Image (cartoon, rainbow over all chains, first blue to last red; front, side, top):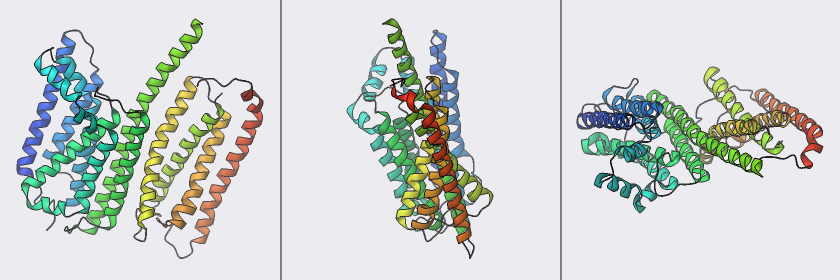
Length: 267
Length: 155
């Protein structure tokens, strides 16, 4: 039995159309909201919109398009797009900020704010929690018989996909902290989450090169190609996240420096 | 001038550049190194994962620190060059001794007589470190007096 073989026939029969619909709805909602802001004269950067729409498109593509390569490599390509790259692009579009600005004052807006500022949401986006949820899920998937089981049960397969996308988004959200939530975590926490997450991902990728997930029978060449896709793809996404965090730091230090210079000049 | 910071920022870049050269030239282009050698112990795998990620983050952190120093006009170029070479040489030596020999992550090349490769690898590391040390001493001589009298700006 090779997961990924009837991967696309079984589990994805339900999950794929749902994921594509969700991605299209997300992108459409975002574009409508940004348009509403611009029509009333507010600025909303096109780059943020482009990032979010690209993220949604990649999410849809990950489920709608058959990835190249043998089963495990294709599975990794999908994992990389849906669970890592698409989430970063979605998060970089500041969807929560846009939602809060586009909604008129009222019940809906208050509800979104209440959730965003709630204690559980605050804990969920703590970098340390997000990294455990994301990487813990990944280790469970590849180091327990979960992957083999997901191949047998369509509902489990769909749940795994949902977790990968949700946890990936949570991780990107927690590390980047571009949207307003209950608490802002400092740079060391976020850098620590990047380091821990990246290391857990790299170790898992390298270990998959030699040892397949329990209960699966992928060809060695497939396993080796897939684990390298995971390793180097993970590097690329890690780099992207680090650049986002570094750019925030650079902008914040620049503002602080200008304030100091202005204060010194005033004296 | 922020001399220590200039050197540290460039050293981070040096480490990352050397790691990238290793990854691109020896793993990908030449195919000498193995991606993962089955005799690697778990602790080696863990240290490799942590260091590999730290290198990536160090590259970004080094560049953004360097850009910040430049923006504020407090970059000491002489110290930065010294730091770059020290970082590159330090990584090369660490890779050659700890990663290859202690953790046995992989070898430089899978040939019967490895000694020559090991000597060349670690010799190159020592040469880089020596050049970095010379530059650091020169940078110190050149700016040594200036740093003491309160020209330190920024922080």
